[in-house]
Image (tube, rainbow over all chains, first blue to last red; front, side, top):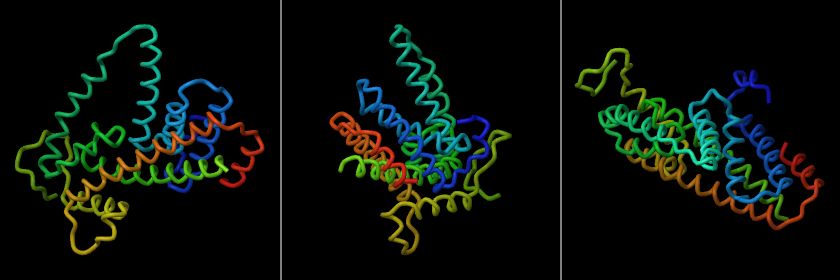
Length: 156
Length: 92
């Protein structure tokens, strides 16, 4: 997909659904063709990656999810070469301290939990967190619907 | 802008209004099935956030379960490309 088109992609749920379906099916068939090990991990990654790509770069959570996927793949390759990186842990601690004040002042203790569940949630202010959460939930529902359909169709 | 905040804020950091937050929280309330039906009076924001976390976790579990089933399917069956064409036509 041409990177330039990312800016024009809408994050309207129904168009997300068709883009996700196409991307996920493509990845799914590729996994079947290649026949490499660790199928479960590959399918899960394909599902998350297709979802994030279908949403595009206009949402913080989809950007964070894509980053996380690429980072994990990179770390796995580096581990193969025997390297250790502590950067991620240090970054996490700094950002957590800043956002705690916001959450406590408004009285939301559960916001901390929510931050861990939504991709990129640690670095968002409370308003953005709630907004991103709403969109994230809609897209997760779409993901479940499409994967259920694919499962039903493939298992007759 | 009104705010319950009494401490001083760093300059350049925008303060959040209570209205904005209750707006966003009620948007969340519409999405979550358990809380949506109990529209009665006012469900506390804390409860909504709690339900949101539980709902996201259950959605994650569903996705994991479906990935499991799909990978089991890949491992066991011998599909040909005709089925892929069927799927494409049914889902588009």
